[in-house]
Image (cartoon, rainbow, N blue to C red; front, side):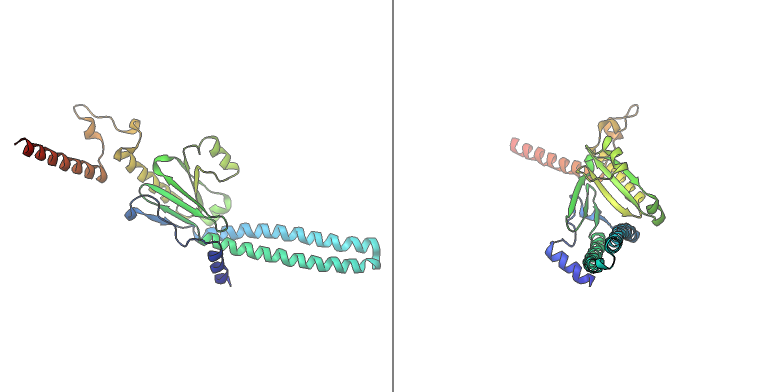
Length: 260
């Protein structure tokens, strides 16, 4: 039954099966998924909401049945029957809506992707409204981990990656109401938040070492040493220097031949 629902949603909503990799080296691409316990967490939230809705509907049914009986006695029996029939129909609709939301919860869990390369990351979530966000490491300003009591019991956490414009007062606002914005990417429900944060921070350091970081963060040269000697060289930087050296030597040889 669920497989039919999933295939129908994928066709009607045109949900892509796999996310496109963000900019960066494909060999360095790491794909992360939400932990299985995150699905249990979503089921817990779904159960709370469904129970609240069913409780409200049940209380409404009790009031709709008891009030006519108390007001009209036997004369109100027909009204009670009509109210009961309409109420049962309404309850059936509510139950169907709860089951539909349950299927959507599972589909959203399956279609949630987190992709990290050496230059950027991409987060995709949602099925009815698909949200896909790409963040370049050069724009990242803050990385934080948040974890509620239920998440701690399940061993999962949310990793928040903020870019330019997403820190400061916005970070304080997220602590009270985690609304989505264009400056924040969420790795929700992962069981290795520390590992993912360390991976992103490591690749941020590699970008800074290759010359894309702040000049203030570069090490100062020691006595008697040139500034270039103290800058750690990455593989990409060394390859670029070798290529520039080969081109310069070729130009010099061409100039010497032309002069001769």
